[in-house]
Length: 413
Image (cartoon, rainbow, N blue to C red):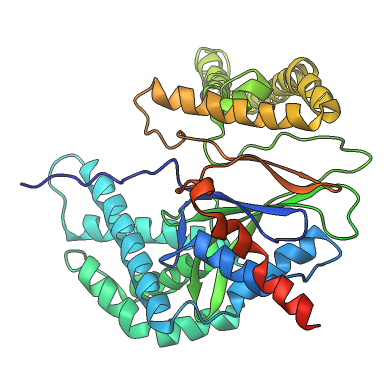
C-alpha cells in the first residue's frame, strides 16, 4: 500500500540543556532536533565536556565560542556535507519545478514551446533575483561561493539535468540555476524557510555580565567545513530594558497573550485594509466622468498617497493601544516577579500553546512534560522541572559522574 508519508513528531524530546556545568548559561533547541544528522543533544554535551571550567566575560563570547566549536569540528565529515548539500539542491530545484508547473497551469488552453520557455525564464528569474538579494551567512565569503560552484559543478549539473529534463533551458537560464543552487546553500532569504533549519537559543550570564542576555540563531547546514548560520534575535536586559517575554517556535499563543490579537489575524486584517484603500482610489477615480485620463491618474495617485498615510496612522494608533493596554502592563509585572513566579509564568505560556494544539487540527508540536529552568547570576542554572528518560533514584551514578572528570583533574593539580 502507498500513501503520503507523515512526519513523526516527538514533542517530549529534550530541548533544554546547560551549556556549561559551572556557569549560568543555558541553551534551548527548537525546530529540527538534529544538525547534519547528529542530535543537538550529543553536539551540546560534547562541547560542554570540552568547555569544562572555561569561562568568558560575556554571554556573546560564550555564544561565539560555541559557533567556533561547530565551525572547526571533525564531527561533520566531508561526505556528509556533500550528501546534505546535494539533497538541499535537489529539493530547491524541485520547488522551482513546482512553481513553473503552477504558472503553466494558470494558462488557459494549449500553449506552445515559446510560451513554456517564457514561463520557465520568468520563474527562474524570480528565484535567481531573490537569492541574489539574499544575505550571505556570516562565515561565508563570495570567494567560497565560487569554490563551491566549481567543486560541486558535477553534482549541480546532474541535479539540474534530472529536474529540468521536461523543460527548455537556455544557456543563460542554466547559469542562473547553477548560481542559485549555490546561493540556496550559503545564503539566507526571508522568503524561504529551510525544512531542516534548527533554532538555537543561548541565554544567561557571562562572567562579567550584570544583566542577562540572549542570542538566538538559525542553523541550516555545513558546507565545505563552514557553518551556515544566522543571528535571528539578540536581547540584552539593562537599565533601559527591565524585562522581555520572547517566544520561539510556535509563538502565536504567546504573541496573542502579549499583544491582545492573534498574529495571523493581524496579518490578514492589515493586508485586507491596505487592499481596500488601494482599490478605493481606483474605484472613485473610475466614476469621475468630467476628468480626462491624465487628471484621473493624478487624482488616483493623490488618493493612494492619502490612503497610505491613513493606514500608517491607523497602524500606529493600534500599535500604541496594544503596547499601552497589553504588552507594557505584562512587561512591567514580569520585571518585578519573584523567581518562582517567573518559572510558573513560562510554564503556563507553554501550556497555553500545548492546549491550543490539542483542541485544534494542527500537529501537536508542543506537549508532554515541560522542562522549566531558571538562570540567575547568583544561583546559576536551576532546574525547576526536568524530565528524564530514566528514574533518577535508580541511577545515582548519573549524578555522581556529572562532575567526576573535573574533580579528578582538580585533585591532580
